[in-house]
Length: 126
Image 1 (cartoon, rainbow, N blue to C red):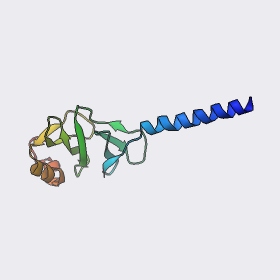
Image 2 (cartoon, one colour; image 1 turned 120 degrees about the vertical axis):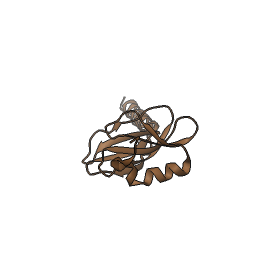
Image 3 (tube, helix red, strand yellow; image 1 turned 180 degrees about the vertical axis):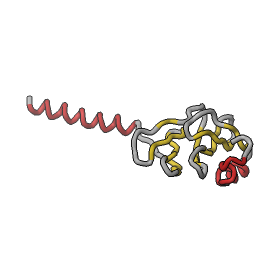
Image 4 (cartoon, rainbow, N blue to C red; image 1 turned 135 degrees about the vertical axis):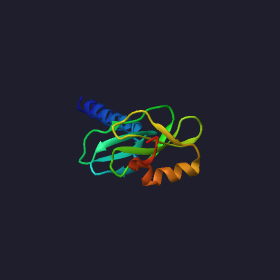
């Protein structure tokens, strides 16, 4: 009887670790503002308080989002998104919302994501 219980316990432990590993993912491309951290996980943009807590998914449209960056004031997030077969640059409020397209070419996307003036309020779409 004791051997059976040990065997069942072993099976439970192994199955639990297998279940935990199937949901494992890679948190990628983090950026930090004064109060929050934004990152990519499972091709979506997530945000979490800097002091810790529960992460909140900000985007979930079909397609991939990555390379998120905060604006200097932390109010907006720029990121790359692939919604229609092209990698384009988008911006959205740090509180979430509908992403706004800000460029449609890869070179413009790279410049837009890294240009702080774009997120400082000077851009007409931001």
